[in-house]
Image (cartoon, rainbow, N blue to C red; front, top):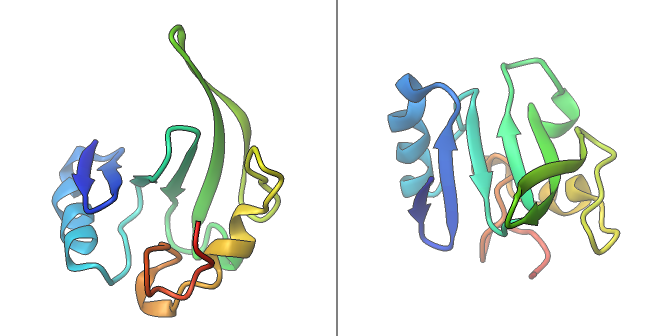
Length: 113
């Protein structure tokens, strides 16, 4: 994954990685399908094709259990996923202003972490 400011990005479709990096580095815009965004090791977002989940702007949220043996999903989904602190992922990310495609950073409208 590539570090951009305080988070990491990648794309499951390596041919779209440049577009993902472009949006991340610009700080606004819509991420392409396949984009992966991670702030902390136990949480990740993956962008799906347009129309997959209008409620989440096509982002799927994942909660991970991380260990030296590897990572495994403990939760995944669109509107119902909660992080290890019991917070619903979408409840925070939906506060991001539209131009930030549900990505939370300082000044994007999300609650501070």
